[in-house]
Image (cartoon, rainbow, N blue to C red; front, side):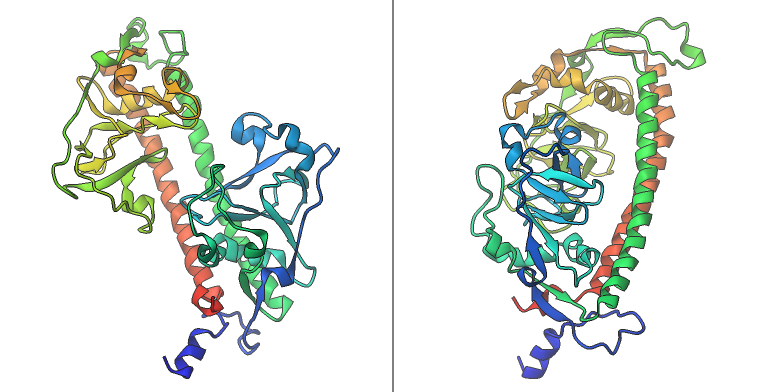
Amino acid sequence: MSKTMKSKKQALVPRLRFPGFREAGEWDNFPLSKISERVTDKVGSRKLPTVSITAGHGFVSQTEKFGRDISGQQYKNYIHLKKGQFSYNKGNSKRFPQGCIYQLTQFEQVAAPNAFISFKFNSDFVPEFFKGYFDSNFHGYQLLRFITSGARSDGLLNISPDDFFSIKLPTPKKRDEQQKIADCLSSLDALIAAQADKIDALKAHKKGLMQQLFPREGETAPRLRFPEFRDAGEWKEKKLGSLIEEYREKTTKQDEFEVLTSAREGLVRQRDYYDNSRITERNNVGFNIIPPCYITYRSRSDDSRFFFNENNLGITGIISTYYPVFRMLDGSNKFFVELLSQYSRKIGKHSVGTSQTVLSINELGKIELPIPKKEEQKRIADCLLPLDALIAAHTEKLDALKAHKKGLMQQLFPSPDAVGV
């Protein structure tokens, strides 16, 4: 490579620059250690809300995430984190394989686990500017070189504080340019948040509607019923095994059909789920085949919740043997999937295990749930389908906004290659 090409590759300038800064020259290439300070102040006797970090959402209260405060005796060793400061969670995830970094914005001050690496930017810099790097996993590309093995037994990556603070973050020399970029991204974040709120409101509406359309646990008649079924009598308790039939066909050659993933959000192509970055390369001979309109679920769960998905992709796919496949013998697939969702707590009680519970298809078949006649099943399904379509449409709009932000950040920030690590 010539010196000219090498210099061009390493030039610390973004492809898109705001008017007034186009002649401002290259950005500085600071390591995080030079522009920030680690936060190590412990909570001690202060009474603060305890938080955790969830990839894709940021800081959440431990009560919201785990159903309770899990700090226990370690609370006094938690870090006293203030609004505007940051924490790095070394847990890997699909979106952030090398861990995620979030700024505290939802609380004035919190108690953050000391397993996180917490820090604050020096006053000469605009903290919100650097969120763009962390949102795009700019740090992950650099931390990857320090990861020599998988996660530890506690699920955290072996990233030391020295390794973490060595990451480089190209920074405009002028604070005004930092602020301009931060303001631009903040406006887009506000649009994304508003769109996400619309989706949450629609999902909450659907949840409330389903609570009316399905009987409460222990009851056999719903509180809300369509006029034509108000005199149809109570729903009949039936074992699920009498309603479904397991499908046991398996692949006999490698990549016989496309590999699918059954996630909490639905059944998707594995390449879409992992954004083309993590498609399984292991032998898939012997995987379960799932034809169109068949149903599957992950038989293992970390929280005793199981999510059932119908194959609406219009293709025959294959899925790991951890995902049983079955079909309805009679009745509405849509109704049945929503029924299983509504009674998720009851279904979870039939799973076995400790840290990870298992729900076999045989055990699923033993569960009794109230079932109406086919005509009422179809009426309920037809009521929920337009709402699902509306949620899907708003979700597509949200995805488009996120894609726009991702593309914009690629223009507003230098590429990871320019960092020279």
